[in-house]
Image (cartoon, rainbow, N blue to C red):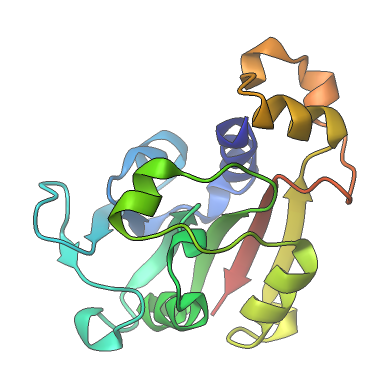
Length: 188
């Protein structure tokens, strides 16, 4: 369910996915949604990822290149970083002036056992908390926060129902009380 919303968000913002584009762990969204990409970069925190072109930690600026990225696609990552505020600063650090961060965070969702066992599953967000957190790094004029979700989608998601099993019309209804995926477009 969340992947449907993430992909809808990226498709809507595909015009920003160009130049030097960075993703976490792999470059599948860049390749699928990008337009005019000149370089693909992949960030990973450990050296065991063969796709990684940058070994670094979003919370440790010394491990990150500065002002090098035109577009950073960072989906469902900040939930799994305890010091998410420093990670937002790390994302800002990576971006060239005028570069874009396309981020998503989880609102309503189950615990990710995979991530919990490896690095932790710490946070769930709302549009308000997301606006405030990103607004401490990017100015309010530089960010646009939105969401996807409604009661039917949220209960279906928590029960393990896939997006393909629910009509598109029902998925696209938005109810601010049931935020499944929160989206951020932030410009440096």
